[in-house]
Length: 439
Image 1 (tube, rainbow, N blue to C red):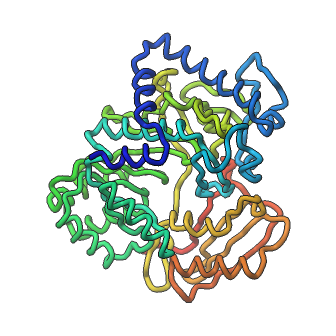
Image 2 (image 1 turned 90 degrees about the horizontal axis):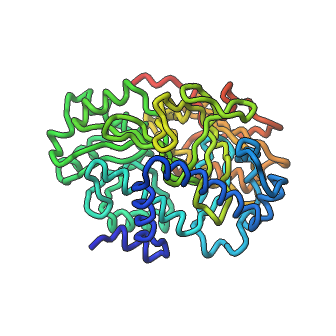
Image 3 (image 1 turned 180 degrees about the vertical axis):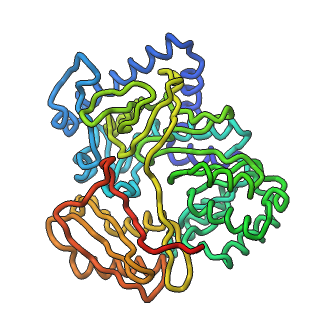
């Protein structure tokens, strides 16, 4: 039984219809494909102008003669209650709702209509299928975070058991933890690894130190898919050497879709079926292929919530070999996460802070921006932008979350600022460690 597909249908996501539409898009010839993209971006713009009062107030126009004149949306535009941003006919109970990680320092809650979310999964399954990986039958070694509260923990574990996944914690990157991981690979016929880049790199370093090759330990292993963080060339070479399988680079955003996926020709192919991806300069002007600029994306199918010319907060280059049908991502700047080194010697992936920051993300948008700095092994500082200082209750809750996910005995300080200093790219780095990792 295809349990993964069945679970999506059970939750109201029309996967089969989405897969049929995706196949129809991919079968178009080049001329029809280009027309399809132009028609879909115009249609989604017009839909939100007519049915989404918030977007209409943001854009302040009912029509356009030139796509490039449509205003660019930023994450700050979306930091108000979700119900104020939903399109007419949609409520929180009939859409897919989630939170962004806040990796850019600007967290918010978002929504997708159920058909749009089904298309997201159709695209993901299509891309994994390039490598013979099937979400219903292929066993996944999953390097992701997991909630540590009892309800959230067992909910994720149940989902993992139903969808042929085994989850390895990214909250403990010690050699002792990796020894346990290794034993699991010895006893389990995993088909592929999937997860955050930095903890998987640390596992590869562990194997390299022990002069082990994972493919010899787990012969069924076919591939490793990394996501959410920057993949550096040397790290990819190390992983491929330590794992003995291809390392596939994925780039996505939870509020949008899968953005790019490394194809079998080793090109980082951009998703043009459900997204329209642009590279803009600082003045919102489109840049030619081969030039570095801001990544701005339009979700072509999301009717519940507008993401039209949406600045995702990354800097990238599209290859000169790109076409409208097949854009190729040449370089992505950003999404680098440090490793936190703790007093006990334990190491935790930077994406650990994805789960911690959920405790300070509120739908009323009170905390506009935040970053976390590790000043030394025991001292973390949270710098935030907010109209009023955090309450003592909120500070205690955040401190408790930090100690739950990391370890006890830490010093957590808080600093309210009017604004945060940005990098030259205009992006905030959510977590910065000033502690040297001597490993």
